[in-house]
Length: 210
Image (cartoon, rainbow, N blue to C red; front, top):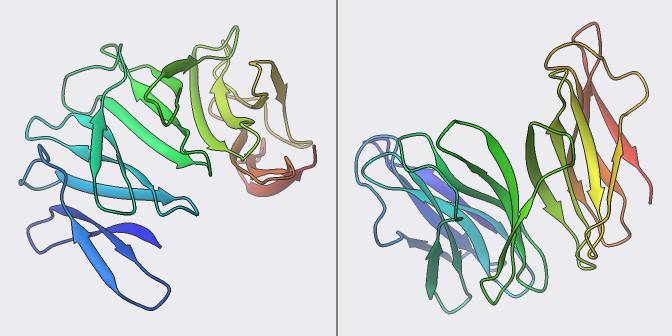
């Protein structure tokens, strides 16, 4: 299990908990020590490698991976903004150690990214979309997430390991501003889950098969 806790000063610290109940806490070098700063551990794969981000003293987000032995590698996506509230935010890691997430640029726009275990970073942007967030990746390297269209609605996508995008909307998803379909996770078989916002501003879950 991986995550983070917030102390009495509102500073975040990462932790890993084993199946036996042992807890190891950690802080990424460079993480800020003020309120709303610190280390935020996120997803963990079967090898015990954690992905997450830390917020520095200027309020900027940076990505990291922490292996099972505790070694931490930090990075920032090229193009990520350097002002408070901007930067790099990893979300998911697969069994190969490939990470996906998003970064916020200097204009405040969101862009998806993929980072391999070797450190190679690729932008993930849906054609025609104004903003893209990558939220999940499976063992085959298929990525899911969602994007903002020119009409300010949300549609979800599946991206194959070769880079081919398929976009989709859940039946019943609204077509108004900030309505639409939000994909968040994908399993080994390629099934995608998430939720959609209807025209009546009601949230409903969905499951999309391969």
